[in-house]
Length: 363
Ligand code: NAI
Ligand code: MG
Image (tube, rainbow, N blue to C red; front, side, top):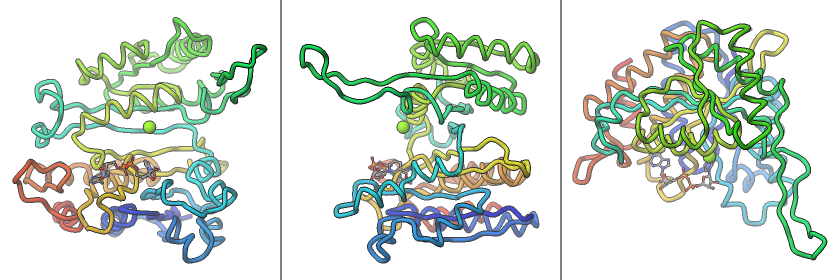
C-alpha cells in the first residue's frame, strides 16, 4: 500500500510555507520513485468561513485513512463567532489525539552560516545537532483531578495532577533509545526525580529499559533545571534528549532560540505502530500562522521543508532522501539564501517561493 500523505496548509502563512514543502516532497517522490499518495484537503478558519466547518467531512475522512499529515499552522486567535463545539471538533489537539500521537520529535540543528543572527555566541553554537523526544500523551496536561475550586476557607485554588504510568514512560523511552542508537548513541533522560514521584518512576523505568535492551547506548540522567543550564552553556553535548510532556514543551522552546528563527525548526509526532506495522504521524513547522506577515509571501519555508525531511525519514523510511533535503537546506544557506527573518539588517531578503527555489535548485 502506498504511503498516504494528507496535506493540510491551514491558516496564515501555513499554506504559503506548505506549498514550498509540497514542491520538495513531490520532487523527492519522483526522484526516489516513492510509492506515495498525496492528498490536499481544506482545513482552518478560512474553510470555516466558507463552509461553516473548520474541518469538513472530506477532511475528517482523509484523516482517518492517512499515514502522515503534513501540516502548516492553525490560527487559534482568529475565531470570533466560532461555536465552541466546532472549535473542539476541528482543533489541532483533537487531530493529534485522533492520530494517537505519543512522541513529539524536535530536532535543533544550528547552521554555521547563521551564527551571526543567533542570539548566542557562535563558538558555543556552531554545530549543535540534537533532538528532543517529548512524551506527548501524559503528565500534568492530562492528569485528573484538575480544576479551580474553593478550599474550606473559601479561597480559590488551582489543581493539576502530574501522572505517568510505566507503559507511557517505556514507549517514549524505547523510541528515544532506538533513535539515539541510529545517531551518536547518547541519550539524556531529563526529569525531576529529586522532587517529583512521577520523575522518580521515570528514572527507574528508563534505567531498567537501558539495562534490559539498550546497553550499547550511553545513558545520562539529568535534572530538568540542569538541562536548562546545559542547553545554554554546552548544547553540543546533547544527542537525544528524552523528557516528559511539560519539561519537553519548555526546554524545546528554549532550545529553539539557538536556531536563529522559529522559521528554521521542524517537528514530527508519531503514534505507536499500527497493526500494519506503520506509525501514524504528523509533521509541522514549530511556528504558528504568523498573522503579522501572512499574505505577503515573505515567510521562511525552511521549517516546513525540513518537516518534509522528517516525513521522508520517519514515515517513508528513506533516510538518504531525508539527508538530501537537509543537505540542500544547508547548502542554500551557505550560498547566502536568506528570508527576512534570518537576514541581517540591510541584507537583501528572498521571499517564500524564492527560498523554495533555492532549496530545489540543490536537489
Ligand atoms: P507565530 O509562530 O505564528 O509567530 C511568532 C513570530 O515569529 C511572528 O513575529 C512571526 O512573524 C514569526 N514567524 C513565525 N514563523 C515564521 C516563518 N516561517 N518565517 C518568518 N517569520 C516567522 O506565533 P504567534 O504569533 O504566537 O501565534 C500566531 C498564531 O499562530 C496564533 O493564533 C497561535 O495560536 C497560532 N499557533 C499555531 C501553532 C500551530 O499551528 N501548531 C503553533 C504556534 C502558534
Ligand atoms: Mg511550546
